[in-house]
Image (cartoon, rainbow, N blue to C red; front, top):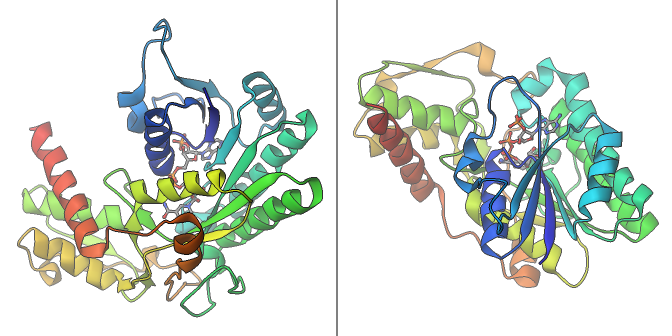
Length: 327
Ligand SMILES: NC(=O)c1ccc[n+]([C@@H]2O[C@H](COP(=O)([O-])OP(=O)(O)OC[C@H]3O[C@@H](n4cnc5c(N)ncnc54)[C@H](OP(=O)(O)O)[C@@H]3O)[C@@H](O)[C@H]2O)c1
């Protein structure tokens, strides 16, 4: 049975990836942070009692800031595949916490790569790189587009990207960068703009709230559906050689388009409920991200099927259902 180690297993992508790997018969080991409250909500449905003989999901305490723990864990688990998804992943927050973002999102990648090298682990390594690395480089962006990050988060991801390439070239490690454009789902963190919008739509529809406050509505993004994107990660590690791939839908919508579609799906007029709040603006904005994923399509056979109108429906319906169930 193949063993995978997943950092960030409690996050949006980690939870979908864990589902995918378990369905494919893997034994899955996830890194979780010790917290005073439970942070495993997204993977609770996958959890089985440690006494079950056929248990295949194992969780281990650890942190990206603790390199020696990464060494001892990987030495004990000996995974064939390592998916590095953990990060301080919020762009706006990275302006408030640039040092912490550099330490976890940037240096965390080096600590993990170095742990693999130090123990001589024979594994394949996936780095969760991001379209935010392209920043101010105009669209469409592909694997050859120059990076021009516009946030501490983007800069930290550029560092992680190059460290991953460096370990591939210097130590012959099977290490890949998945340069994923934004991907969303009902499990997206509640402070990310798409989820903030769909949650607000559900709450307004059910009369629990009247208004939602947003920042820049003009930013354009290439939004895809997270469960499809984790399939792309897995395909990269099954390929016959390590390489870097853009994963995107190739379509572009503004935040305003997303807002309008979400309110419309619930039968509401967005202009009656949306207000501007300057605090949600980034000090430096990324105006337009649109990915060209043709390399992933040709070499990995990966193509996005879910586009923004369907994505909006999936997310609004899930938020409405969740609130209705609470009653
Ligand atoms: N979603 C996107 O659109 C997108 C696009 C491109 C790249 N990415 C990158 O892909 C990865 C997954 O994204 P996501 O949307 O699933 O992010 P997410 O929901 O924010 O999940 C982040 C994960 O990282 C963990 N984490 C944060 N700091 C940590 C630390 N110091 N030590 C150990 N674990 C830590 C979190 O644990 P807790 O649950 O304890 O907070 C959580 O499991 C991230 O690296 C993100 O930057 C995401």
